[in-house]
Amino acid sequence: MLKINKIQAILNLKGKTIVLKLVRLLVYELCVYLLIQNLIKLAGAVAGKNDATDEASQADYLNKLIPNITTMIDKIRFIVIIAFLFLALPSANAQNTSVKVYSFDEFSHWLEKETDSLYVVNFWATWCAPCVKEIPDFEKLYAKYKTDKVKLLFVSLDFPNQLETRVIPFIDRMDMKAQVVLLDDTRANRWIPLVDESWSGAIPATLIYNQDFREFYAREFTFDELEEIIVPLLK
Image 1: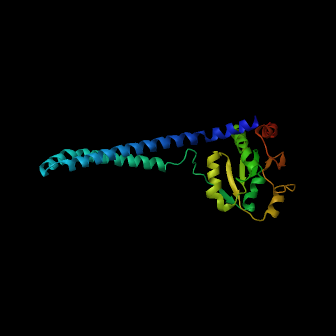
Image 2 (image 1 turned 90 degrees about the vertical axis):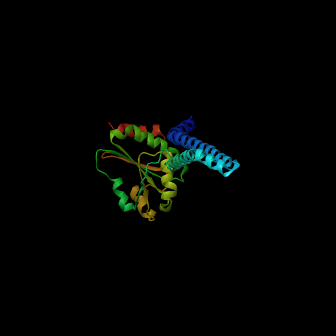
Image 3 (image 1 turned 60 degrees about the horizontal axis):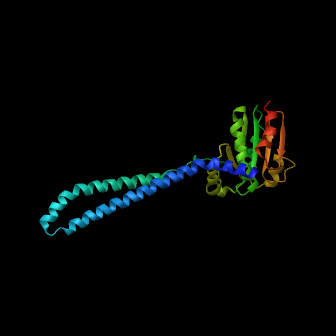
């Protein structure tokens, strides 16, 4: 049952992407079909001119043909432009995603904010299967409670040189709405215990805190488990 729920969550996130890709494909195929049909007509028109038996007949044929050729060329030009525009469109969930890269010292203020909000800081990576599995649950939590001053931050531990090629495409594909930053600090032995003294550095891991509560969890979460922790803290 849990696996089915996960699949449904992912399908819901990707539904818009699939629909737009199908629309783009259909429009592109239609443009190709119309282009071929007009090219065939154009070739037939030229062949008809060549079949004329004398110069007078050819001249008369061309006088009748030129307006039709001009119209067909305009149609072909229009079809090519439409096809190009659809190919150039961004994918359904393209969000001009921007991910800031921080050293630990630049990032550390996220671990000690003194406001009336509840902070959920999740450490993850695209190569971590349990991390990827729980992302829809965190996103569901964020969508439900963001108006109740719940702040969710995803902290990626991916390699910085994979930000554009792997991390951002992953964020767009998963349609992640919460803020994502990438932690780029090779001094892991220094900053891991600064997040929590008990943390080994294994992910997924999540810090949940507000002014009256602070707890670090080196484990995977489901939505229900997150709610069990969050809801009492909002009262």
